[in-house]
Amino acid sequence: METCRVCGASLREGAQFCSSCGTAVQAALFCRQCGTELMAGDKFCFACGTPVQAAAPEKRRPGRPRKDASASPKAEAPRKKTIYPDVRGLYSRDRVCSVSDRAVVFADNMGTLFRVDRDMNALCREDLHPVAAAQTEEHVLVLREDEDAEKAVLCTLDDRLQTVSEQPLLEIPMEAGYESGYSYALNGRWAVVMSDTEVEDEELGRTVDQDLVLRCADLESGEIRVWEMEQPEVEGKRILCLKYSRVLLDRNFLYLDGELLDRNEDGKMVEQDASLRFDLEAGTFSLLWQGNGWTGYGKPCFFDFDHQIMWTHPREMEMKRRGWDEEAKKFQKSMLPLVPRKLAPNSPILDTKPVWWFPKEYTNNWSYFDGANGVAYYAECYWKFQSVQQDGTLSPSWCKTPHGRTEESVVWNDCLLADLDADYYYTIYRGHPFERPETDWNKDRLKPEKVRA
Image (tube, rainbow, N blue to C red; front, side, top):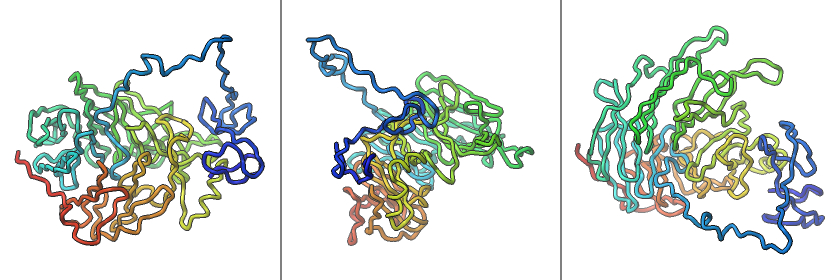
């Protein structure tokens, strides 16, 4: 909750004046260079030293009416709609579903491919064993390994999951092996195979990654691009390792976590966590966040590419200036806010989107998060599945599950699809919030029709 900058009293949501002292509530001010939140009266940013500039008033000739932007034909032109966003929220800790306006496509941990349409009609195919899948406007795309595991094969399927075409697409660099970093990614435009080699760095006394290779196929043009980096860097800092357990692909960018080698305030070389973005067209890395993972200040947790938002931990100064340090102590468990920002480095908090509170010890155990639309689920442990509200309140309706496959859950089309009973059947939980029925819920079983090759 925000407080008055003069007397410190709590402000009501949407208040224009403080109800205790009458001081006008000022809008948040951010540095135009680094995005750090500033206070009224600051002339320079305390984080980067950039001068604070107020917005220049609009100049108008006397007697002339203000130009109405809404009357412009260009402004009235309809915005281009994203037909198949790659990710809405985050599905699972290690697996990304492909979502379109017509269907959702995902694979379970047994290698079965599922497609569920808006009427909850489901199909499955067991012979493909996809390493990645994508739902486009016209087809279902599947990336799988060939029999010799030497090439990644692109399979184009129709809505009935029948094969339309197959073609060997990308070489699989087997010299890297599975013990080193190794991952796939796929969307409506790109198919990607990533690999690197683990080597022992004597100076650091630890294993690091080198010889990063990204093989990318442009599905629109048919062009194959290979990016090779002996010791990859971002903004002049060496990338020590990349974490392939969570690779997200949206538009022309790969999003992934890693570790960097950089100097701290004392000039000493230290290892720091980082969130990175790789441009598949330019072949370059950019840095979304860098810091200490054990504090997590500013660290991106989830990406919502449909709304172009990344949900992050607040920065340390944001915690203090918004009074969240004291607010967190009011909760019984240790809680931290999760804030929305534009999908860009050092962007300020978006005040138009809600701030979420969540148990900080379960940050890595979320099964699904869509903060913009108010849906969040996580696996508290291997045998318990929970839903959480914006204020951090846990739903009491979910009981313990007999297995650890809660990461297989999918939220889509106002339904939760989940196999919480280890019987290889997904159950449909309808409505929001999704409550687990106490009686006969077998009628809501999702029994997919099996499709033969």
